[in-house]
Length: 507
Ligand code: BG6
Image (cartoon, rainbow, N blue to C red; front, side, top):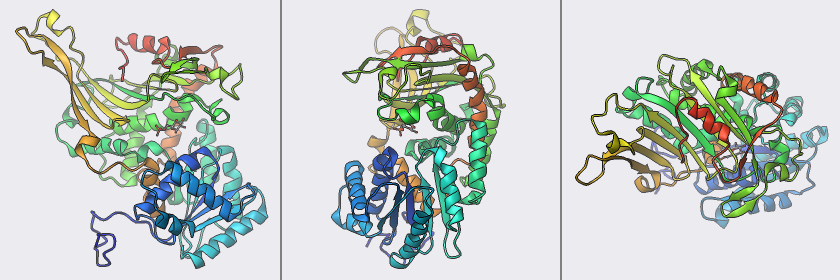
């Protein structure tokens, strides 16, 4: 008998998988890319891993004219296409029993009445116990109408169970709109019921930053401006914008991923040890970093942005950004952004963080490289240390998840020649367990009401405070740099680092 099946199990046993209690997930934006590619497969994988309750229900609400059967077929296909775990008809049958679809426009009161009825029926038929999470995988412009309809139809609270709302990014497009969004959501749901998704925080390798820093004794003493020269945080994608022109144009790389994923990574790397790993302790420490992080004083010297032009990527000839479907010729949206951020704390002042993100770059890789200062004295011949770089600790967020330590070693032979070598930890080699997808962890945490991995609105607003001046500076420019697809970004980004006597890593 497995631990999960054992009715006598001790619920405090930490080895037990965390299993969601009875509940439903009501998905808005169910025909969108995110729902099909990530959310639905994650729900299936959770069910397959036995982490959803038997009566779990999934409700779709959209303006499509589907019946529940057609909707269930769409879900089945998306789950089959995207699931990480093997397909099981038994699991699917159980999941399918809880699937419902409510057709309608978001401002159509009748459709909302129908949703209310469906939720009540699920409580009876599937035993969802009044526990329902509303997942808003929709453009932010639609949040106000959906949230106010939830309130108007009395669905935001229940005397029997819990109600939660899950918000996908972008959380606004600047500080002002983020505050407004927060006000709208805050009028309907209490703070503890609002879950903002930053899917990077659901990645195993991102959570490992905390384990790496705070479970080990040997790194923390050198984790500061006495030893660290600078930190590079890179999120490179080889894909272009694909069919996402409508979302991406006018948003750009900085708003799309720096405001959230990269600044969250920076906060985890820079923060002090939290008193515990609960949500509020983590938030306090991350907030301190974001509140003390400064955009560059000289935006012209320490930021770069650019758009990809056609070229070769992954052995294929690809279009430039302005040739992609739906992108206007006049677009000034950046597909690459880089900037220097200074964290003004005793630990980090003088050690810059360089953030860069882009589409259509040389290869898909997200990593954090902590680059150390050189040894104060090198008792070697200059020629012997020509190929010795700076020591670096590289956390590979994805792919090839792991950690690499780069240091100098003597080249075998009769001279004292020293060259950089890598010492490597790879998840694949060390663990037999495979990493769950970020969305599996995050959806499960929503259903369990477990908030540590969800940014609070203070973090979101502080991140906009860092980014707003950079974007305002870019908005004043009359043109935008370019870079060829398949390369590592624009020359201006290389110059930006060269000004500080540094170079970007080639991951
Ligand atoms: C999303 C961005 O947040 O992250 C996308 O909106 C990007 O533009 C995606 O492609 C990348 O996610 P991942 O998990 O593949 O690194």
